[in-house]
Amino acid sequence: MEIYDIKVKKMDGQEILLEEYKGKVLLIVNTASKCGHTPQFKGLEEMYEKYRDRDFVILGFPCNQFLHQDPGTDEQILGFCQLNYGVTFPMFSKIEVRGEGQHELYKYLIANTPDYNGKGVKWNFEKFLIDRDGRIVHRFLSKETPAEFTHNVEETLEGIAA
Figure 1 (cartoon, rainbow, N blue to C red):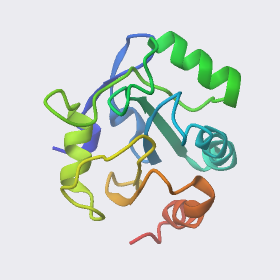
Figure 2: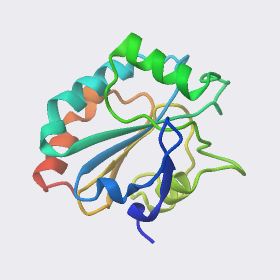
Figure 3: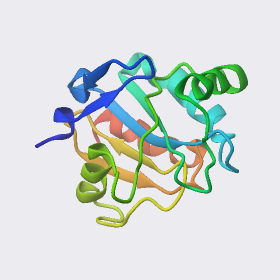
């Protein structure tokens, strides 16, 4: 199994395979609207705007598992992100990133990440960087802002990430 075999649900309810993003550099983020890290949406959107023409895509997955910091509906969450942070990168339906209901995507990410391999997601806004071949090349903790790992994204886009 590879990351592209995993099904995810868009905010409009349509299910897709991540295969739709094959050949692109991906940054997968578990998001929350009412978290101390929520302002990272601004930096994420700036990063997306800067690199999307180079086949870079951020995939946002709202999660309400950490102190119930994303309690809204998919529609409310999307509206909040667009209104307050101008988010244009793809946002998906709310999921669970840990525990019994952990989404298949996060089971895969946790099991296949070289950084922190096997360690579960501890908080909102953890980020997983995937290269064009579907390999997870970096995992960034919640506190790491987009500005702090821009060089990793650039290296991955250039195909020089390890």
